[in-house]
Length: 130
Image: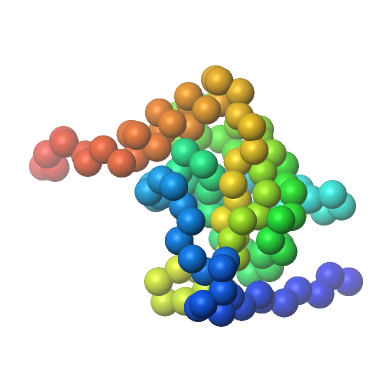
């Protein structure tokens, strides 16, 4: 049996400080990830050049290493990266519960694919709607 508990972050705790080096871009995509002994499938809510936020009722402790796999919109080839939990969020009216995962070392192609997507997501849609 798996027991889960939601982790709370005190407002003045270091984990609650804004440490992100790049603005997030909204993106909802299924993310499969695993820790040393478990496999999960959740949804990412946003992404930036350095990582993504995974919505989950049971975020892992800070520092937990994870292996991620997800597909970028318009791409058939999945992204496979390693990372670690750098932030947990207990959930609020403004943000769902979950965890921020920082990407580890990315190969050149993977970094370019992620950077290109983030730039596209940040660019306002210039098409007019009819």
